[in-house]
Length: 240
Image (cartoon, rainbow, N blue to C red; front, side):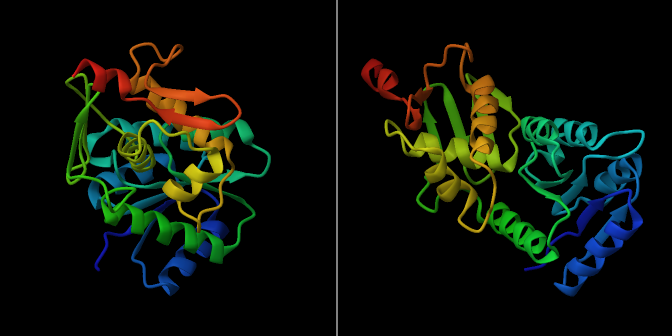
């Protein structure tokens, strides 16, 4: 399988070189940028298969780069792996809120980073979170084309990150059952991905902004106190 290059946006030369060497040893083609501005230009011209994005960039921050990429349709489904400094919990949450798919905390293990990259690319190429997903889902005002990644909420097209798409796809195809955070991490993120349970909460909040008419009082993606989350399609079924 021939993939487009992996784009690294990292201002520290030593880390940028380490990432480049590590990925090239795994037979990845690599593009590397030292600034956010340069990274955006490379992304738009090179159409990478995945972006490794340092959040602590000079001038234009990694968070702003993430926001800009996710606002462009060509990059709505390209996986973004954040590099964060240890202890910057707020930046991690904000990055996930802006549409990043996963994060690695510095200092990181090159072996773990490669595993994360491969996991994200496998899921990106697989087409959906579940091999049992239908080609098309249309219910509850939500229309999802699992082949084209097209998502429409009440007739309006919305741009979701790969992980948001996978999570929504899993929830709508497994309705009316509560899943705890650990289950969702395993079923959607995958057992080879090591992220904190709070990551699920961040993605649920983002999905509610799209799916719910009032995300402060959700009627579809529900919190089951003491358990986790549930997608409720029963009202729609009763109406039909």
